[in-house]
Amino acid sequence: MKGTPDAPQCGFSMAVVNILKILKVEFKGVNVLENQSLREGIKQFSDWPTIPQLYVNGEFIGGCDIIREMFETGELQKVFDENNIEYTEVQ
Image (cartoon, rainbow, N blue to C red; front, side):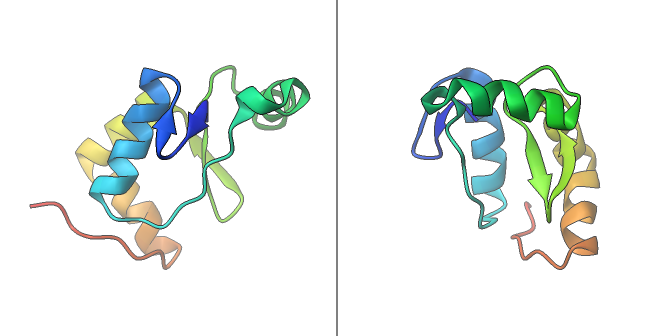
């Protein structure tokens, strides 16, 4: 992500952080702005051009738009269920 979970540095990172915080999922953010080679390397690793990127148990899930859509449809919660990741159901 750009920035940290407590201080996102772009709207897309903030959106993903907010989704994870709404679900009360434990997660770790990595600030790619601190290291240009990490920033470029993560894009090559995932073959995905944008940041933030969400990984669950090492598997690339998607960027902001995909995560937002998955959250809205309940697919993100299914990914967490399949990976035994605890979260809080949104009412």
